[in-house]
Image 1 (spheres, rainbow over the protein chains, first blue to last red):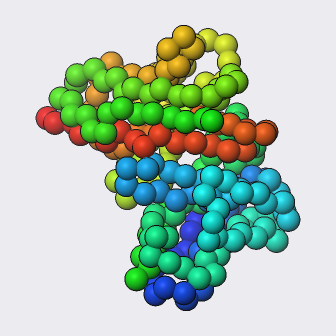
Image 2: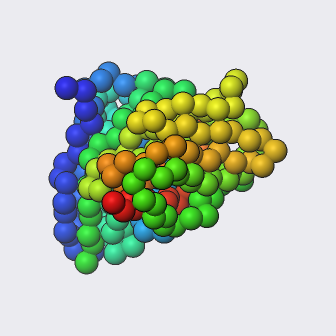
Length: 115
Length: 114
């Protein structure tokens, strides 16, 4: 089954404790993105990747890192999480750019709480 | 700068009634426009998209949207709403070099009453 998976689905952590949210897709997509969703703000793009070892900032990259060492994986790293990063995070993948002609497929989301 | 406005935070309609969700965008060039739906506890699913050509686009689940350049709008419509359409709907515009950036509106939550 074609899908985007994220782990963990739920995470409660403390300020400053490094964490990684994994994202994996099995559709051989070149493009992958991370978004955060906050009430009243909709979804905002954090980072995107156009292929292995090619990443760039989205709209709200501060406090986040990403890497793309393999085509199928695009982990999101919070090196020193803060309470304002409490949010619902989505990973997405597609054959083309996020805002382009190809459909993006979204993962189920990761709900992160930073205390 | 690009932006998307969804003026209605929450809409309630009766099952079988028609639906229109409003979306206005701001973008300097010809926009790539999208509507996504998010069911409770789920990720997002693409309903439809507009790039060029016919300004009335058809999507999945019986939805359609009309691009009106003069009004900078891309409203979503459905002639007869089903209870399963209850969800949150997001309008989005593709922007930036190579359309790598996707900017979402704040969403409209749809409630369907029997």
